[in-house]
Image 1 (cartoon, rainbow, N blue to C red):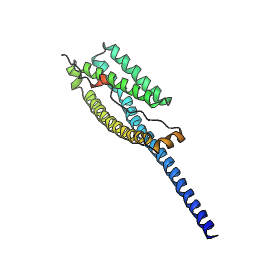
Image 2 (image 1 turned 120 degrees about the vertical axis):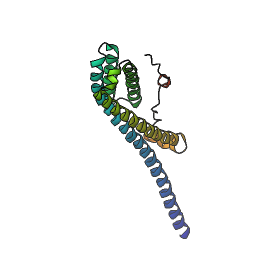
Image 3 (image 1 turned 180 degrees about the vertical axis):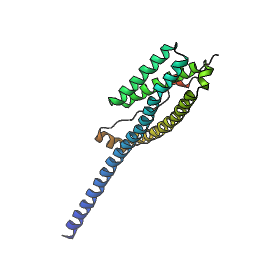
Image 4 (image 1 turned 60 degrees about the vertical axis):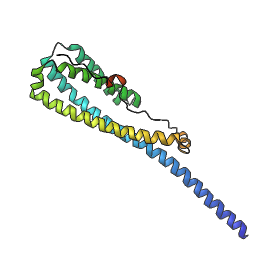
Length: 191
């Protein structure tokens, strides 16, 4: 009878140990996934802030460089694509692509601005550029935090037992928010 009682206690302890292991594993993968979602939400907040600044920036530049219609159309299209990707809750990879397209369009706009010294001296333009620069810095910080969360999650689900728990929850590797190769090129400014 004493042996039987010891066996039952051993089985109960083993059951709770295994149950605790599974609960901890599931909770870890869920927490890491939520960290990614939280970090991405902060990236989107800053992308939206930039999106809100762009119409004022474009309006100011149009007053000086109205004949640069192609860049204004490209910015409007890229901005609409990003807004649509966010509003329609598209996959993060599509949102990243839309954000990168808008970043490229803004870079081209800023290259055009170099040809208009009066515009650079305009107080409204200077204020908008300061706000845009601050927002770009915030985007960079939030992108770094997002990528850190992705790294932690992806590393966890590539290891054992994390991969097991990720499959149980139907989770797969998250997408990094990386700079496109084209964006790494130094822009050519001609006067």
